[in-house]
Amino acid sequence: MKTKTDLYLGDCTSELEKIDDCSVDLIFTSPPYADQRQNTYGGIHPDKYVAWFLPISARLFQVLKPTGSFILNIKERVINGERSTYVMELILAMKKQGWLWTEEYMWHKKNCYPGKWPNRFRDSWERLLHFTKEKKFNMYQEEVMVPIGDWAKNRLKNLSDTDKTRDESKVGSGFGKNISNWLNRDMTYPTNVLHLATECNNKNHSATFPAELPEWFIKLFTKEGDTVLDPFMGSGTTNFVANKMRRHSIGIEIIPEYYEMVKNKLQPVEPYLLDPKTKYEKAKSERRIAVR
Image (cartoon, rainbow, N blue to C red):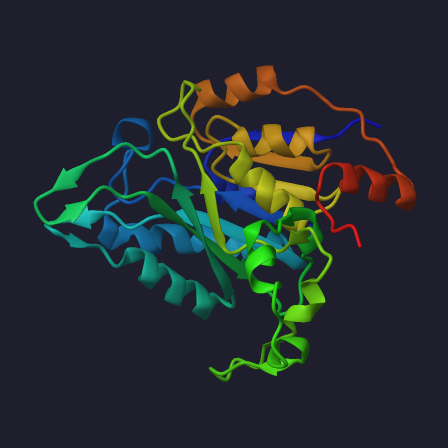
């Protein structure tokens, strides 16, 4: 059986009704930001953004599984010399809908070109807001582990007595640590800051993000055969990546040219099933799990 991709042409407000309730494992999307991409999507005034987005997020809440995650790539813009508050207002409004604002990730655009304004410097980061329906959700942290690097050489060289025991958090968060647990490990968990270059090649779209961005979250929150939805498909980056990673992808796009472009380029991929031992060896060779 080949991986499945469902593409819908139209406004996601109505097209989302075609998707079954509680059928999506991950929603990853970057909607038009307030008053931006006016030539492409018409632009939404910041004062009207929350009212525009809430019907969409209400339906996304219905199609997402209780164990699923919603990653929203968004960024405030500057209006009349100060930052708009529409993103914070949106977060509060979505919480009233029932969403849990579980985490916030940052995309650091490490190749952002220089810039300066009279009262600020050029943005080099964007938000990735993580919403869930429940406190317990699917999360495969081992899939995004990274080399432990020089931290181990410095911190683990001379362990104190405190480092060898579970040291409770000093800020009352309830989380503790035992530094000695990381002895003889070559992989560790990443932070919530993603250092990725911006997309440089022309995808015939005004706002593309790098493939590595949805890939990281697809690894973190889904497994093969799960369903990934992008209700603002654009150039189809999320769908191409999900397809390549053998996930069932769903894309919705209101611009016919982008819809046809993605439809013509997407190719089905044969899924493969690995036994647990083969999966372990594959992950180890890709340096995604620690070798003890």
